[in-house]
Image (cartoon, rainbow, N blue to C red; front, side, top):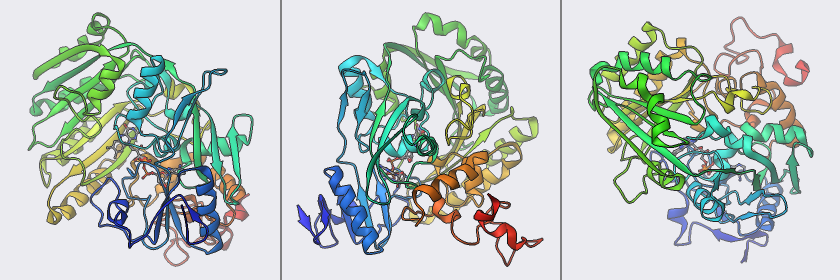
Length: 490
Ligand SMILES: Cc1cc2nc3c(=O)[nH]c(=O)nc-3n(C[C@H](O)[C@H](O)[C@H](O)COP(=O)(O)OP(=O)(O)OC[C@H]3O[C@@H](n4cnc5c(N)ncnc54)[C@H](O)[C@@H]3O)c2cc1C
């Protein structure tokens, strides 16, 4: 289909019946956006034409695959949305054994296809409808990451349409700096990713488990969990997520997966079984795909939406940080205080164990910086009524702030528009190198969004300070003019 002379693919405009469903992302916290057009690319040529059209007419655009950006960064008002969700093919190249996947493939499709065709998988998240490219370009954690690494660690090559509208490949051999940057900071910073090529890993039977404790035992559970979840000492086939929910909900639970049989898992869990206050414990053996479906909340048996720990999931504010050192007593007290005083019951924090294969790789080997953290932390609040939004958002922001003395950084895939020093938080010491790659591949800042590298490469950005602290007017002491241009720092 051709329309507006140059936009091709399935083009949705405000007067089309499909417009209303096309202009919302997964997080229903946001009012509907009003883009001028949404292009559902049906082939790479549609992406090329959309980019060329936007560039020619100086029209701002966003890229969308699964639409799960926590801050709806894949949408905008006015302008163009380039939606790649229809580019979702998955096939195996027989000669290399590598898997070529469309950027719009959803995670459940990926896991089901690889399992059904080859009993294989790639490391990735647990939400069934998250888009493969959005997940991978920021890193991609999941329940087998301690064994096989992040999604980016299994990535062999990407195909991308760049700012000039050229289609190219990046890998360790071809455009290695670009490939470095795409693995951790690739979302809407350098180009539109039109294919991802992965190495997959064999999987078979797994054991999944859940342990629940009384809420009053939270401090003891957290202490013991930290001792047990030693990122390097713990068996790599074992991963778990600790959910510490509000006092009002009364839930303290550990849910996990082991790449092996129940008999081998039992002894690994012994230290956890000795923690006082346990109310329930289950362990089940099943195929890898059954476990994927269980954690995705789509199994036939009643199951648990692991990603978020609550059933009502579509209106939320989440944010993140990393733990590099075990939480001390004051940190645990601050955590208990926040969970004891919540605006509603569906407020929680989740700790996922890192280490293993994730930490084998150096923090500067890809743009994903926080490889040496013990755990990632995800602060979460869910609500149903519009008037509850403010208090829940404030609770999440305050909770993250209260824990800052004991935490570091944030995960770009759990993006949060309220983090003032977001660039440092997401990219740590990799930031300067990323800005160099950005200036090389997108010198005109065609690819932009509110937390994009574009926002750091314009005039006036100071690498010495966080964005909140530094402006020519408010910096104290004032920045020297020298520090105000990124160019002068090289
Ligand atoms: C319910 C839920 C569960 C989650 N679970 C996990 C988890 O287990 N592990 C984990 O690591 N993360 C998890 N996430 C976070 C998830 O990885 C991010 O939200 C991810 O960015 C979503 O990707 P998407 O394609 O669905 O979203 P989108 O909103 O479509 O895209 C996200 C970002 O990527 C950019 N982008 C998308 N496609 C492309 C492309 N082809 N080229 C260039 N830029 C592109 C967009 O512009 C946007 O900035 C979860 C999120 C949700 C909502």
